[in-house]
Length: 262
Image 1 (cartoon, rainbow, N blue to C red):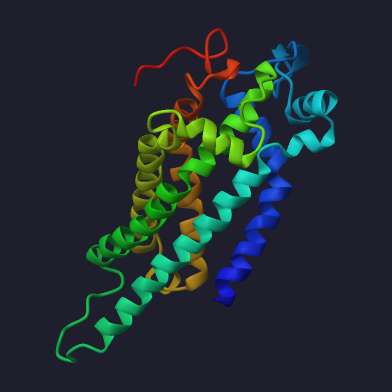
Image 2 (cartoon, rainbow, N blue to C red):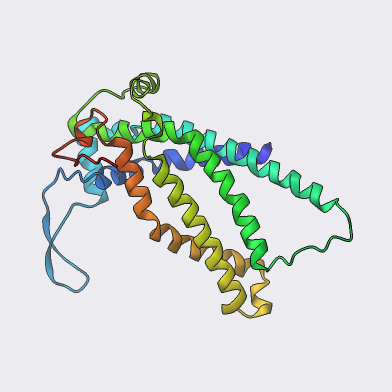
């Protein structure tokens, strides 16, 4: 329980600190370009047109809504983070208890090697269920967060508060779970890629003495996780666009956004 509480507090702090970055990222994902490109130079020294960066976007938002406007959507995002952490912890705790029961089973049952690919498949399958359950339960709050941010584009006021947003989305058919399928697919594919690549690296690319070190296993897991998240980023982008498409906001309708049928 203490571990879950500490994870909730840490996650909430990071959520608040990163909210301006997330706000700008969402506006960039939907193609919002309020500022004209400027002339600059790339890494090769060639003169090119450059779109405004993070600080320029943040300054533009602050000039329109004030500095507190940079934290628009932080309330549903905090709810999503807290609820997701609790669900994830409960599911993982259930599997830990299940593993203890298995360990107390018949002593003559031969345990699988921790380095075998079958063990990787078993562990990945269990890890897949926990985040999938958290994503399914927290998806409504994620949709509210995205729409609260995107309404900045057309200066809409449809999703101003958490309760008003819930009522507004409730009137739509399955609006709470818009973009859920690509979100789940992205998480599942990323997890399988990360664990499979980490297993291949630890088994075939590293020496036996080195691959058994916990530090090297964590490093390989981090590197493969980074590449897996890059490869599955299109799923995240499609999920976010589906969440705001045709939702009654100017940012989710032409000319800012095309009308997506599927």
